Length: 241
Image (cartoon, rainbow, N blue to C red; front, side, top):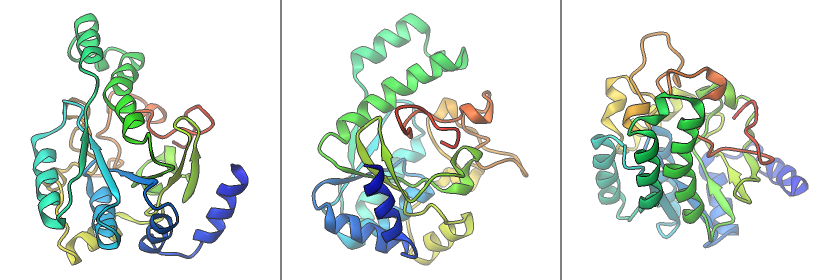
């Protein structure tokens, strides 16, 4: 698999984000899926994918703790592009057990509790959403976090057994917002209120001037811990994930 990933990275060298998406949508017809958080990067990808092939699977994870603005973005996006983003929910019995045993806001108590919550609310539904796919599209960018600086355009997700592609890897914040403005892409209005990264409501806050763009996610933890576990390699969290 490492050989295939290396070959694909060579083939993607110099291609635009849209060209990368077109290649994988065509070559992995029906076996590619895009998991959207409905944040700015993912809205760019949704716009591109909808312009290539509206039948491509786009899904989002409703953890039960997302912002109202995120639901509004979902509605506006479906209406704008004439698509139906699939919504996956966590297992209700697992959520009930976790909350009743550890409390509604258990994630503030320890990293272990926070990762348990992410596993139940995000990772388990992701596995169901990706069951029939061979390729997973993400909106990861290098400049988002110190944990992502070594990410490549094409990687292998050993946790889920999928090829993972990051078409916007080299894009800057300015690139993202220029595309959104120039193409009238719907976006989450929390971005206008100082939220560069948007996840679950209790685990996301606006950032202050000069703060890292990921500072608002799990702000009570150290930077190297700030991932939910969706992006793994070789079965473990990499230092750059």
